[in-house]
Figure 1 (cartoon, rainbow over the protein chains, first blue to last red):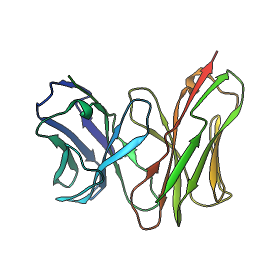
Figure 2: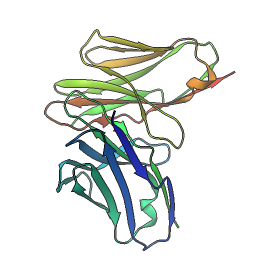
Figure 3: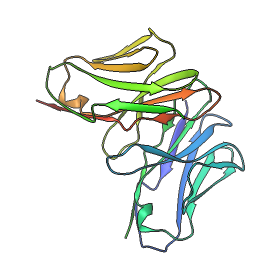
Length: 112
Length: 110
């Protein structure tokens, strides 16, 4: 069966520090991968998605970047965090058309 | 641009008091409509996929239905453990991505 791992679960970082969140999927190959951010009381905002190794699409301009160094690994990064980067970050994967997403457990990022 | 609107934003129910959540959508070429449940501090958990108007899916006290313009999530005789935020999402056209609504937060009091 397929599983998705996301870590860390919580993170408190100072403004201006770097960020690296990692997401891995097991039990499938060539998944479509997604990074979402969810602000308190708000919906899911798509940040990045990837349909293959090295293929990254950005949905909104921001202080973040994403990379896919391996087929089942998706990384969200920042060189210098801003206060506005605080939020709940979710990684997800799916097979393609007609399939829903499977989400990771999320990372609560607080920038102080 | 695909639009998904959920209502109400919040719903407070007494245990056993049945109710419905609404998800209205404006898309071209619906491929699937998805319902998720999200508990505080956790990732959304998949509930149902609906593909065509008239389709219905059930799971325990939850029943999802789909028309050409909206979907309903019916909660029958809810229990406190049904308290959560329920998210609706659509996939349409040639786009892999899901467009999510803002969610309905359901609170069931014992």
